[in-house]
Picture (cartoon, rainbow, N blue to C red):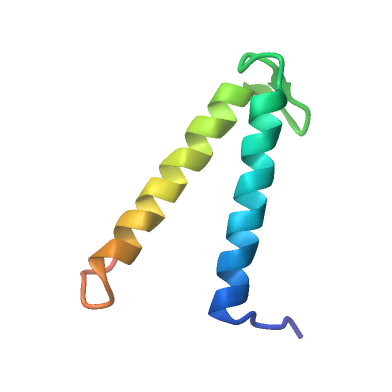
Length: 71
């Protein structure tokens, strides 16, 4: 059975993994490099995709628990 992590632990994991991703992007020779696990994507595509997801979830969290469901 999967373990549910406490909210502070989840926030720490998000922060740590975000920092690792930022470091990987910063050390890349170019945003045009291919993503090894998804060769049809460039690093730019991956950064854009993850950024859009983060912005969407940030808006959902900022809206609060009484906001309408996401569509």
